[in-house]
Length: 490
Image 1 (cartoon, rainbow, N blue to C red):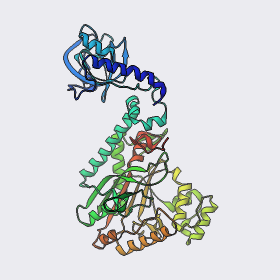
Image 2 (tube, rainbow, N blue to C red):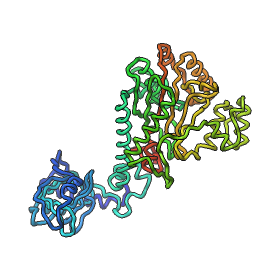
Image 3 (cartoon, rainbow, N blue to C red):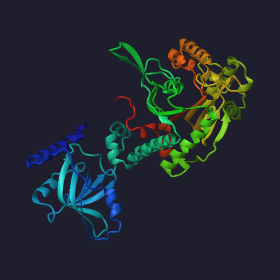
Image 4 (cartoon, helix red, strand yellow):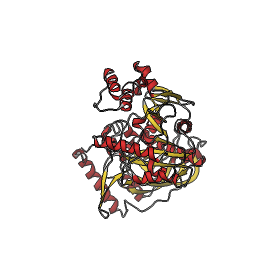
């Protein structure tokens, strides 16, 4: 605690003792509310200035301002603000004594009559004031708010108390997730849950977090993706359409767009390919935009973005050729591809295959330019171990990623259903892993066994919830849209 706060805390502790001396419990068990601030504003919108409503209510919330020694209190609840009037004409001696022991930040309950002041302020004339939680630390200073960005993230509860924009961002996140869920359920998708502790990390190329189960004496991995378990459910015939809004974990660095713990929507639909997933992405993100922004025209960072479908469909190699003049589809071997990337000033480790070299150039020279929504197709098969080969070019996979404002927000495949091909892909990943690629996917024998029982033709899709919420709330950092982001220890 900041030592500068100690004197203020001492004053509040003394007031706490004062409440107890009055026989008041400063941390009671409950308070029966009958109304919230916004509800009262709506109900009495027509109440004239200076008029009384005759309605007696019980409201509760946090004190955010006090004027005239507590005669006027601004009380905030989750819905908004209402003024409370505390005066000896309506409060008894003990009630007035309680008011003198209140501070900004305290939680109180108020009973009284609703009126509108001569200045037009909807007000509750308090006939009783109940302390619900005596606060021992002061809130950040009123006019400067919580300006310390790090403190906002580390003490999110303070951020939410004093910053209405932070509250609204997280509330919009909740509405976005609910809208995505409703959209899928209405289309007969079954919501499921899959394990977060895996014996083999799979479903994405990522470095996992490792933990240990004492009773079984085995290492387990926090889920990097739910993909392989969701497809097991489709194999089993639980449903032809399944989805999970899941929490996943990847042992990677922090950035304005990356948090090691993140939320994604992942789904699978039998008997369709990745083109069906393109349409579904447009539907889902459009639904989310209409819920969060009221329409398909949004703005991020001062840039207008039109989310109206259909969105562009461009291949990775085509976009790279447009940006650099280099046609990677005319290159047949890895060494030439690496040299082409190096000639373009793209940094490589030196052992990249053809597909990795193409992806590196795309990431360095194209991604940031993809402002309008676009489905980028033609991903290299080398970097798509769970996707079917492209029907017209076996070097490529039937995979797309959707980009908006230069960010990947969705990833989808025509899912690989051939167990022999899948085994060969896993074996190639294991060779890359043995060569030092920590993010290569390990071979999962049980998943291969599931495929040998038959996975129907299948389209799969993943949408990053955190980045989507960033876009739809115009938030500059992923930390703004996650209630409790991962932070470096102080």
